[in-house]
Length: 67
Image 1: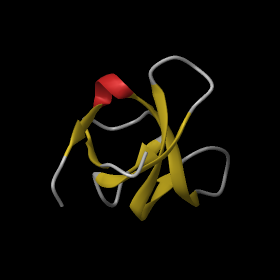
Image 2: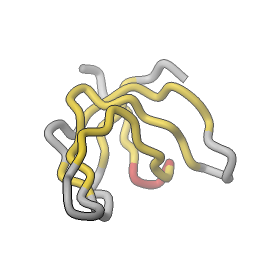
Image 3: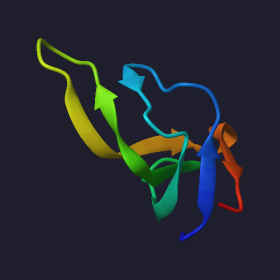
């Protein structure tokens, strides 16, 4: 928690404006983390896309960064 990370790839249903963020919590499931993005992502679900500030991502898709 508190580490800066880079998200590898593109999570399904999202358009990332920034590939980086900060780990804010451990998720309920094993090896998944809640990441607060540096810029909101666009979530494409339903008729109207919406901005989201946090995503849940597998630890396998995260790389620690020094930014």
